[in-house]
Image (cartoon, rainbow over all chains, first blue to last red; front, top):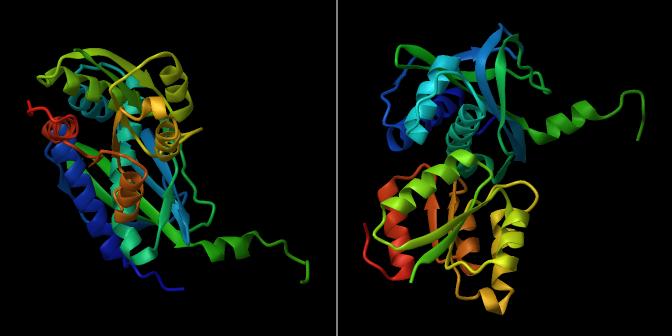
Length: 174
Length: 128
């Protein structure tokens, strides 16, 4: 099934909603780089990652990723408190930033994909790990430059019926 | 008379931001109470009277719309103004919240001014 949203349209929604959250809530300038398509599980992730799940006729995930240092800067802008290391407040703040970016993306995408549900965010802080989608689909990834560091936003969406088909036990008829 | 406020959001970051915004208003704010979901909010409301609830929608255990339904089902809580503050910005969700008795709706991301203006319009007080 062909997606009603092209990669470029997904990238445009990522850019618009990321820039809106950064300008409205953080007052931080951010500059988008070229969109890329990354296979799931490719490369090693590190830093602070927040994942939000989509559910409905389309399923998938959205994620944001940045370094621990940039996570502290973003959290400081959001909460007007300085942070010199990643702590629970920083993880919560990054989870909320993900919730706003991916949540607003979801509302915009729903005009073409139909109603979508959103999970509460999961936030991970660590190094040398990989994020893999259950469905094996690739991510549409938009990198941003903020305070000289990388801030990355990724989206993966597939029709839910393809997931149900992939979960059907093999070798069972009917 | 001081206005007691209940902030309901699973994000401590948003609760802190809203507390800061409340402190910037010209309203005489009494106590500001916090809850991480609808269940905790109802537990607080059983023991405390508040004049205003600022609530997220997408929360674990009990979401904001379920909380709103519970609040509007209790006649003694009918006077509480409820403003939904959420990323859920679809027209259907806004209509649903208003029909269920929310006085206001603010979509995240928000500015402090948007929150202040919405509180003022709901409470019938001047902004700032």
